[in-house]
Length: 81
Image: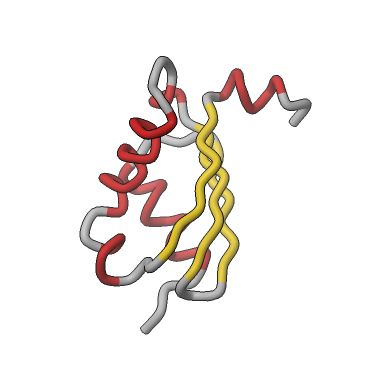
C-alpha cells in the first residue's frame, strides 16, 4: 500500500523534532516543507540526511521520491510566513 502525504508527514514528525511539516504528493512522489531547529548550522545536504534518517527504511521501501524544502524556524519566518 502506498503511503499518503499524511503518512509521510507523520513519519517525518516522529523521527525529527519539527516546528512545521507540510507534505503533498501522489503516493509515490512527494514534496515537503520541513521547518526544524535541528537544521541550524547545517548544509542543505546535511538537512536532507536528517530527514532521510527520520524516514529510515521507509525511504527505500515506501517513499520513492521526496523533494524537500528544509528551513530553520528563523529562515521560515524570514520568508514572511
